[in-house]
Length: 79
Image (tube, rainbow, N blue to C red; front, side, top):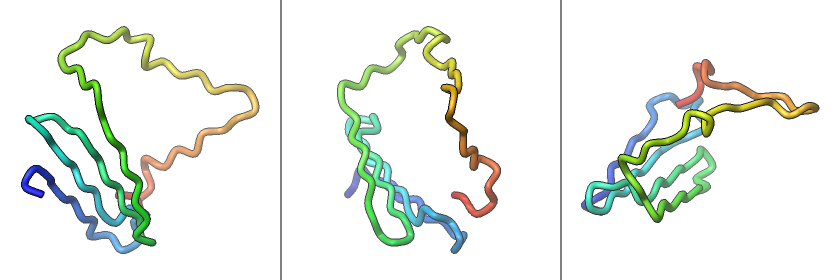
């Protein structure tokens, strides 16, 4: 696709093998996520609104009791 950009990991231990970003009129409309087993997760974006002011309360998170967070942001094997 002319409007798609592909990012491939160089780390063989990464769970994610490839990301494909698809654009229409300079807006991200799809994200394809391929894992090492070649399974595809497809995210489709619609009703896109850019430049909207958002309330900071939208980004507050409180962990519900009885749950734990698996934070893998510092995982060197990740993408």
